[in-house]
Amino acid sequence: MVSTLHDADAVLARLNFDLPPERIAQTGAEPRDSSKLMVVGAEIEHRIFSELPDLLRSGDVLVFNQSRVIPARVMARKPVVNGQGGGQIEVLLLREEETNLWSAYLKPARRAGNELWLGEHRAEVVGVLDDGARLLRFESDLKPHLDEIGRLPLPPYIQAGEDDSVWRERYQTVYARENGSVAAPTAGLHFTPELLSRLDERGIERAYVTLHVGAGTFKPIQGSVADHTMHAERYSVSTETAQIINRAKAGGRRVVAVGTTTVRTLESAWDGQQVQPGEGDTRIFITPGTPVNVPDLLITNLHLPGSTLLLLVSAFAGEQRIKAAYDAALAGDYRFYSLGDAMLLENQR
Image (cartoon, rainbow, N blue to C red; front, side, top):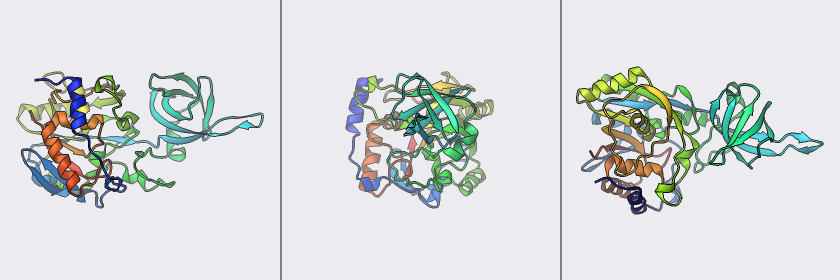
């Protein structure tokens, strides 16, 4: 029986939990693959992430999101006119909508026609989107200058301090290639080059997709699930990746999604029979009752209560298994959220 969005409200309420602030990971495990890994199937097993090759089979396909986080948080300034102005504006760049036109959140907000300066780069507010984001028109290409003027947009629950130099490496997956995310696909933060080599040696195949994670990943569901608007995120699936996944599924081999962003990409590219190559924007919202067709296993972190990601993992593994897993994590010493520990979930289908 397929759940309705009204049922999803009830699921989210039943999965709600209180998390002591000290359980929110402020640093990642070192080495990365020394984090805990909860294996959730018919039973719950407690392992270490470096043991992942022992939990997978030769012929399994691991699918990674290769998006790279950009230094999207920039302190801009208002122009000085007749000795007035020059105040600071916090800018969170979301994505380049077209050449030199970016969507962004501004704090404090600015009206259409206002201008601001990001370093030496002038921008004009040329529009306002439905979610309150502004459209900024730049006079030249901003991307080559972001490393100089921007900071990584770490989640609000991480106390990062003023110097983000250490995060330039630590808040990226070791296989990140395509610039465009404003948040890391955090399930991938547990992988090391050495672990990837061991997976290769076990005959576990790799494939890569791209989904540029938007700021909506931090947005909790407020009110009814039915009223929640998913932000559009840009994704792409190459012909090679589609062929690798489709061959695996046709041969009865397992597909393992690394992260919820990978699940959302694969399900967006699924045509009912196969994964299709291509690119586009997705607003896919996976809630309990939504079939998850492509991945058989999912590697993911421990998510925020009241979040779209908690609904996604419930759709994937089943509400009862997720409830049991989160109860076990809370009772144990698992660390939560972006830099915390991981789970390996089995598709309930």
